[in-house]
Image (cartoon, rainbow, N blue to C red; front, side, top):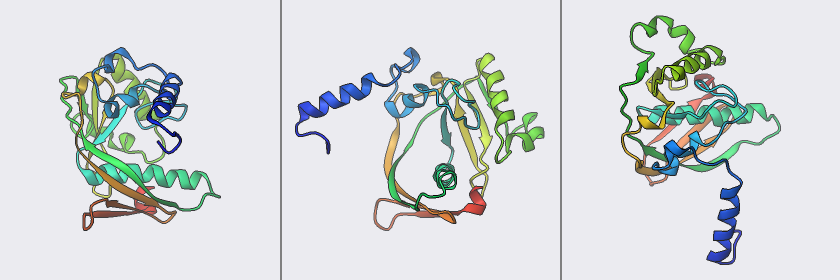
Length: 206
């Protein structure tokens, strides 16, 4: 709306932007955009369970602190990869809950997979986890539960490989959190005054 003088102009800009994006896969048609968007793109940079240009993955965490730690890592990573960039001021992020349920799920924190914990929790190399996810896709696995390496308390995360793993089409309980990142620490604070805060040091995240 800041770029447009009227609602009609805004609608035109939104239509141009939408036309420039890859089409949504048919299997996400009923999902809210916060759940569907990760499956729309094939980024050239990989992540823990997605190699470059592979099909999308939706990442979530079982507790809020873990989700904030994971996001804080990527804010810090951006700063470290751009040495001339000043510290990142507080930016709003939407935090929400999503319901997942799948019989076709793997838990890397349980036997027999936990025996390879060192592989799943590598802090800087994703080669093994990406290869595992590729095999999981061929077996039609919809969800991988795994240990967070960014959360100091190592709570669990989930990598949703198939949109069918969502048991509800819309997210719940959305709230705004502000994340400010420096090279030594990342601070997270809920928008509501007096709300909870978390701080993660670079040593914890890296």
